[in-house]
Length: 106
Image (cartoon, rainbow, N blue to C red; front, side, top):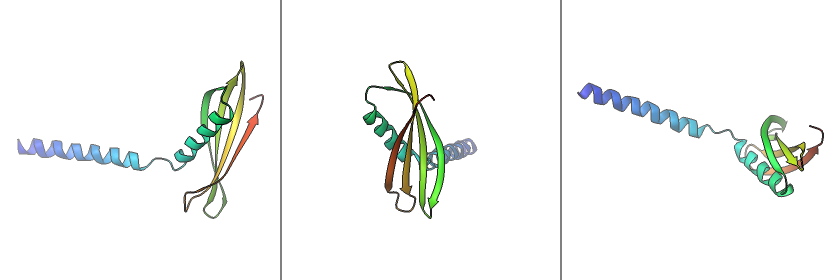
């Protein structure tokens, strides 16, 4: 009986550790993705956002990166992309600039 309890406790601890590490490993761009969503919703209040994609990161300088996000939006039957580029500092985690650009014709 003790062996079963110890084994169950071990399994529980492994599962707990896995869920904790999964929570701790959230992508660092997630914060800026939420900011990008908020900006698109504010800039285009009348449109429907139909798709969202993280396009990637490029290094600009030491500790300085740009994350790109693409939003597919629909306005009166017309679809177009809105690209949001967020420049931020990896060291102090501060937002430095944000650029919003429309791409018509997909």
